[in-house]
Image (cartoon, rainbow, N blue to C red):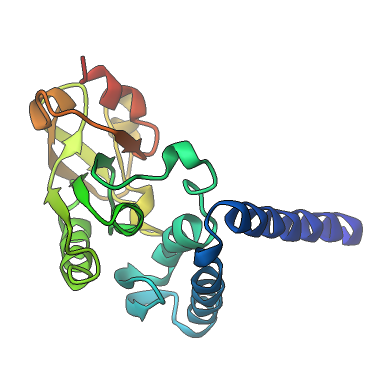
Length: 226
């Protein structure tokens, strides 16, 4: 077990080094705020209770979230650079970006930070999560004032209808659409959400970047786009 732990630690530090190396090559100016944000996020995860709303001020963005576990999304996108290490996925000025499964807005805000100018359409069907998304967009409006961000309370699927969504207590990011036998067997809370197809939501709108993170329902999203 001891050896396995050391191996895991080596991989962990290797990944951190790789992130900083790529950032130094492509966007060296982002390294100091990245390091500060990582330190702030680690401190918050250590100090905050597991449950209960958080409000955090990072070097490049402020964030409200329903619980501490939602900080993982911030760390993955802003600190871990889940999208930023491949330049093809870094939004450019003037782009139109669509964020399907926007959750509390970590990717939406990161895209706005990268773009500086353009428009973002963010879709999040869960009512309470959508409230946080709107709040985070509003609270950071002055930072990204040249980016037009439109948040809409819809699930994106292969049909325009009312669908069932499973609520996962551990993290808002794990909520997902559910149907059929899975729905019949489920004992956790279920709510009904409004769903629309991409074709209905963004007809004839040219899209430069489409980000989809919907906990296994990605095929439904693409099936609703011709």
